Image: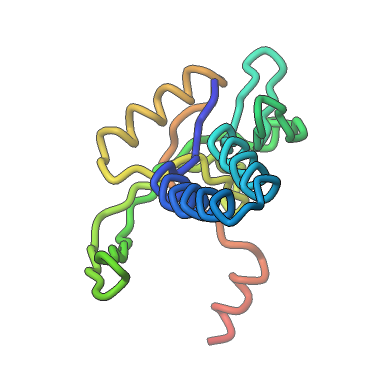
Length: 167
């Protein structure tokens, strides 16, 4: 199972600027530089990042691909004993044309994590703005890697308990 985390809007904005620069360099008589910019654009559009799960091996990897070449080391899933959904609020800043104005948009964000038995070590798997999509996503991961969906309940460590008692 692959989870792709690549934002295409940013790629599109940067590549459009690079295309204009490549055209300008070609017109100025430097085709080598324009070729390099086109090569960067192709690499940028074929690159992806995400998380891949291997059901039979109980492993996962955070990966990056460039032109089909996958980079990322496999790690054990044995430390992760549950999947949790943590809801919170987040904000986006949307810029206007020519970067002259911006709008701050606040929205609910549901984060899907893999957690260990104490819920202190978390690995972010996905961000969803819709809670039903987050639940569907968590169920699909749960079925894929045979890890239950649990309620987020971090256990207090001995250090924390002793610090609370001193107050």
